[in-house]
Amino acid sequence: MRLIPKASEYEEEIRVLKCPQQDIVVKASVDGFREYFLDRLRTLRRIMLGRGDMYDVRSIAEAKREGEHVKIVGLVYDKRVLGKSAIVLTLEDETGMVDVVVTNASRAFVKAMDVLNDSCIGIEGRMKNGTLYAEDIIFPDIKAPPRPHDVPDLSVVLISDLHVGSKMFFEKSFRHFIKWLKGEVDVARDLVDTVKYIIIAGDLVDGVGIYPGQDKELLLSSLYKQYETLSAFLSEIPDHIEIIVIPGNHDATVHAVPYVTIFREYAEPLYEMPNVHVFGDPLFIELHGVKFLISHGRSLDDIISALPGASFSQEGIIKSMRHLLKVRHLAPIYGGKTPIIPLDKDFLVIDEAPHVFHMGHVHVYGVGSYKGILLVNTGTWQGQTAYQRTMGIEPTPGVVAVVRLSDMRTSVLNFHNPA
Image 1 (spheres, rainbow, N blue to C red):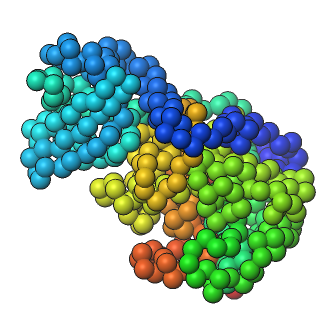
Image 2 (cartoon, one colour; image 1 turned 180 degrees about the vertical axis):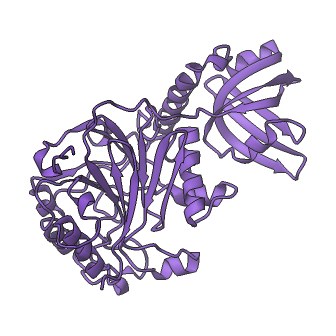
């Protein structure tokens, strides 16, 4: 019988592949936004040109001149649904704009239903009198990278949306979870010995002044006190477990994506903990060769409202996460509920494929997959808020996903309402 070493016997192995906090250059101007979207277009077009079927792409200006059968890549400037008969997409690139007609007789019609504004897509079709009639729509798309070899039998716990400081924070449930990590709960004891990492995908605290009337739902009205209390909870977690955190829209950060790291002046106790690693959003890291893409998920509000079939149900959320991977962007829609910082580089492009895609924000647990990539949305540790009641959102509190690095097997544990 092979004896498996405990997680406490392993050294941490965290490799940061992409994190925006060191590289952000804000350009709050018309030219700044132009540079931002040009970088999005050029990066995603470069990804698409790497496909065998997209080598002969033309610019929009070239396609208009050449006519006949052409392929283009552009950003979706506008989408108009003409009943059940056709969808008209307006695409743009550096050279101009073109209307793309997708009729219900085209194989591209079903794909066109899922096209969202500001996404980058490819079109194959025939040009006639300056209008492109689509025969197919090509998304940037993605697939899981090869699995690394010789990955140790270690596990990663995925959680998000603690909302410490809220009157609806389930402290008893979170303490029960911590007791499990300490080996004091007789549930999945063999699993807890393998836990080496915890990833918290944002909204560590409830924040202050995030929405009208929030003060009535706060137990702790000081942002400093919220982070102090959070740090006290996290300090009870065994020292050999590395805690990786990113901010959410309730945290002390710039409230536009990409999020910079939590402001140290409010969360000093968090930064002083030796086993806590504070990063920005999005975060792309490698743990013992396994790649994790982590983002709070602020853009899910926009995707769910725009994508057919998406919703705040478990299935609808996973459908939304699949779409983000298909278009290879974490916040494709501009001008919705997700504020976006104009940068010289679009950090929200998914330019490298992960093994695991982790989000939060919507407070509903869901797990799924897309082309070999594990998808996890990690619920919450907070009860239903007044806003969520108006939206019909039923939170799933206290649910924890435990991912084994060696084979991606995911265990789901529920720490809510402990006896």
